[in-house]
Length: 80
Image (cartoon, rainbow, N blue to C red; front, top):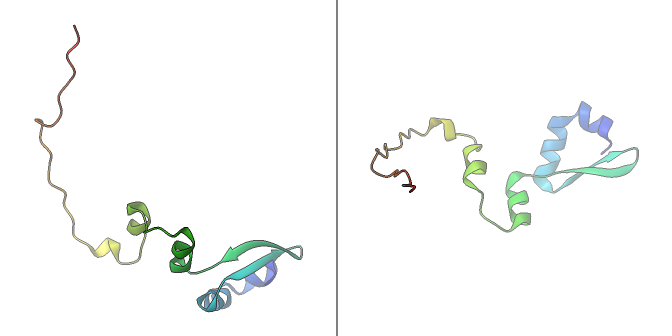
């Protein structure tokens, strides 16, 4: 798919990426690859990081209030 076709038909490119990687050409040469996020993670062969998981759809609906650590966990170093 040329970069012009990609720019004019992003929805079509996304549908094609469900079937496999879409190579986007720039001046007739491969320049970019569009693929599903799950396929990208398989290429990395590692589980997603916390940061990657925080960007997944639906995360904003999770109610999470972390507990306060308190002052006793932090100790200032003593010099001298």
